Image (cartoon, rainbow, N blue to C red; front, side, top):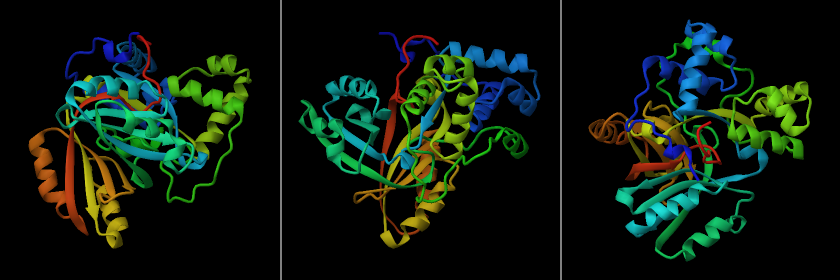
Length: 340
């Protein structure tokens, strides 16, 4: 079956300044109308719509409606799978096809696969995947780190801090409700079947028209609008931009696994979260108790970042890095089929 990984986006495809501005606008508000986007960017709505249609049809960008695991009582895990090099592609593809995984990457020269896994409860017994992986042939080792606290990011998704929009443009596009929940005391939210169906549709296409969503769920258009607004305000639903892997290859990306003095973990996490190079940062279980996803233009700048910014983190005891070689799956639960 053809997936968006097979769509012919040029290797190392670099977005133009206009495309980056549109991507940044959609990162802020994935369901903003073309009129709202156009007003913020200073272009016509037809221009905004045409740019989006080109990026979407080519498989370069998608907008996804995703859910934060915390208010739903779910748990996030960061999983590292060491395997023989000949098995990395097949195991990675199998992981990417699962709906409980996101951010499936091949790292460390093809000997490690990393991914985020979502479970319905706090224990490993709640994940058939985490039970099965250690028994998979050609898997050498599996480690799973439970995500305890998010310092920066949303759920298990990365956020681009270096978008080109000004503070005024960001403010104009920012929707009501929390973009980034503060703290861990997030009120629980109970979903009914219609909510789950609606969220599943948005996870496939975050910009699906209200009429399409209403027809598919059996809800009225006004109910669809109301539930999307309520789920966003409750911190359950947020919208993310998924980039084709060939766009991501433009930069040097790596995972940081840091061992921090527990007494200074909160301080170090807050400092790390403020770094412009960090797309996601969270406290995790294990000896390396602070994790970050890092995105910089070159390996040389990554070296500078390690020796300057990371080296200055409070309470730092040990640093390990794993460069990302290839991304098989991004922030959403589904790898899309065909060109949409």
